[in-house]
Length: 247
Ligand code: ADP
Ligand code: MG
Image (tube, rainbow, N blue to C red; front, side, top):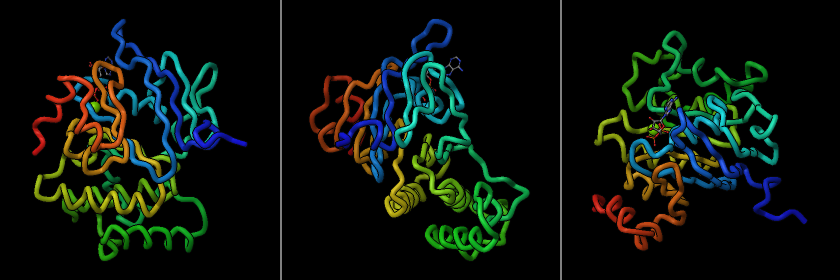
């Protein structure tokens, strides 16, 4: 019998990830496991190593030590490096722009394989889900920031990635739009059953979106748990202070 939490069944397993820059240990022994449909937030102040961890998972940076497994396959580890495009991941970053010269439809279809009809159906399905089917033949510059972000989400999800990696994806949007887009994004991610690693420095965003929070400081995970538990039983004074500006 396989253990439900073995790397053979977890969507993502990270073991003892280490990364240094010029002798400074930026990621120190990070371990994580993620199941299908689960949203884990890497939460912590600026500079604590969130983006570096995410970049290593994506394969755009490499760890000094440790292993990464996706769907039971080692994608990074001693002597192993699977390039980003072969990791079954979707990426969404604040500044991860749409291709300006491609229509909304072609942006969403960009990473898709299959017949024209299959691609068209998937593009329509996703644009419908993000409420933008009417913009299918428009170009990015004809859309608002929030609309572009929803197209970027549709594009990232189109190839049915095992894992979505999102780095502060909503921080470029104004406050008025942000809550709505967070909720819509979460609904869609849950419908698609994707496992998600969401990086944020905003406790409020983590509380709203995460199934599990991994609270980071100085390259470590200092506390892990359900949002309610991390919020109500902070591990130390610093953790309590970090959450204290939510109301
Ligand atoms: P966060 O996303 O939590 O704000 P980062 O992972 O971006 O933090 O950065 C963590 C630390 O690593 C910071 O001190 C940052 O300056 C440093 N760092 C990140 N990338 C590099 C790099 N390519 N070269 C040197 N230092 C880096
Ligand atoms: Mg960052």
